[in-house]
Image (cartoon, rainbow, N blue to C red):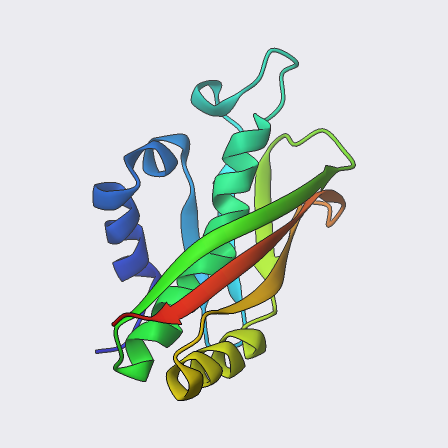
Length: 151
């Protein structure tokens, strides 16, 4: 069964309801990249009339995590996944629709292959960049993912 944005958005609604209510959505996914969006609204604002940093973090993490989930599913193995660390920088007020793009899908396949082969946990960093409608970067998130074959 193919992994699609619609299936992930349904998953978000049931498993990550706070992200769903804040408007986080998967727009496109492949093994190489993933795009998510979130639009500034009353429910996800901060006191400064822009998007709360944690909402941006949910959308950014989802742009990395959906690819991890999809590639674990494609491996046919039982593999755990967890964010071990994250870093973020904010360069502009996030208003309107913010699009997060991650192009680090290639890192996942290698880590999954290594954990299956060795049985040891593997870590890798993935970057997600958030831009506004004008293409201006508003925030950049880096997530350190860990994967390990379940015993």
